[in-house]
Length: 165
Image (cartoon, rainbow, N blue to C red):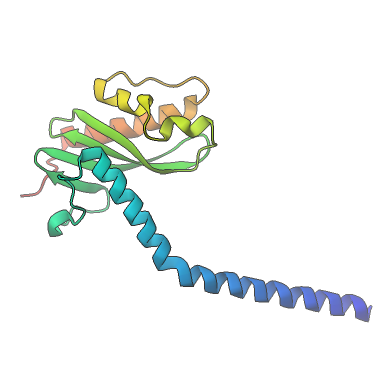
């Protein structure tokens, strides 16, 4: 019985030590992870609307969480949705009349293979600019969720005054 208690105590101590080490490492790398995510998103946005247009500083404008960019008659919104494998976030670029000029995926947790339609370059993502985006066989749930998210962005731009003076 003593051996069992000793083993349980040793296991509990190791578990506590491992948990503390993981928490310390997560705290240590938190800023680097956040910076890398921001840099990756900035690269995607520059690809979406052009490097010369998007400086990444938003010029101090308080656009809010989902309005990323609003200049030169171009609006970029972040929209989220949930596909088959989980959540995703998109950047949707639109003219002020709601015409889609580009769609890029900021992040997703879809299954590799099924989620390949979300990875740029993607003819399917580019089909949003021609108004010819349809659900994809084999990735129906995810593709329909993306179509719905993009539609919400279009509706928002058409219904709201998007760019503050």
